[in-house]
Image 1 (tube, rainbow, N blue to C red):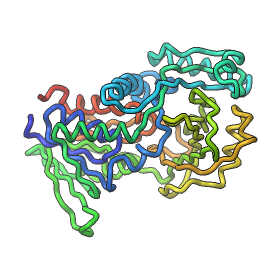
Image 2 (spheres, rainbow, N blue to C red):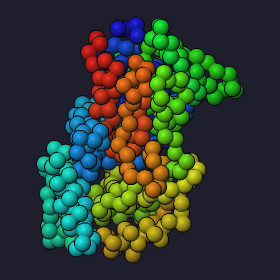
Image 3 (tube, rainbow, N blue to C red):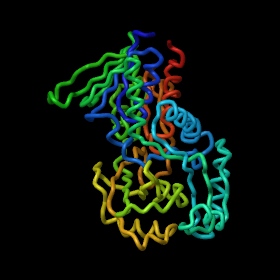
Length: 379
């Protein structure tokens, strides 16, 4: 098996996790990344939260892979000295009619195997977070934060230590499959030589291209009918931060979830500084400029759970785009892990729609992908 070549399209956190797992199993791994470095898109433009797995439908990929991935991620961070903190999260009801929603989230969490969730009264929330307004809350002690860049660097380093290669400025144009030889051919362009198409023969392909994953998936000539939805609208998420260095919270503070996301929540970085976001800002273009006009809307939504917001100013921080497969009027979709049972090409897996909790789930996704390729024990 050591002579087999596995190509990973995309050098974000999921692609890095797949590359590391495959390299550790003795495959020759090549990662093709269109940017100049790892993790410059979805993987570096998120809340850096280690999710517990409390929101997602039972038996969904988001539920099972998040719960499994959470434990794997904490272990990885410990073993590879990645900065992280198990700070816990409070989901707060800001009105009495939201308290039932907290109980629904608790029931969903327990169905997913997350049993450390605790319903808290208004007084209990106030003891934990005196500056937070609530009518009650839900404490998730296993939620945490991670330095996502340090995590990705550790994945890259361990992959390279086991022989993986990284090719940057390489944008995959299309793929093909020879059924008789069971070999793939990836066609890609390099940033420094115009429109010239290069070819990479390989035995396995894992598409982890994030926002570009549907386009890569739809470039293969499948023997059966198969296509991945390509979005025409993008779920942008804006983040703001406080203009000063106030550190008002010890936990992550979340409102009850909203359509398309988890609401404008307060997250902490490793230094304890707070940032707010993301919102759900549907747009027709893929660009990374914070919508500064959202400041007053953010301030109003934050003030619902942190009244002291009225005494502080917000400044734009950064934004990201969720790689959703649906649009603004669609229900939230599960992760798509499409293998030969879906498209008829053995040795090919597409990882599409890997939005939150993709960072938390990344190591578990990598295990699932290699299992679908029959590569669970290749050394």
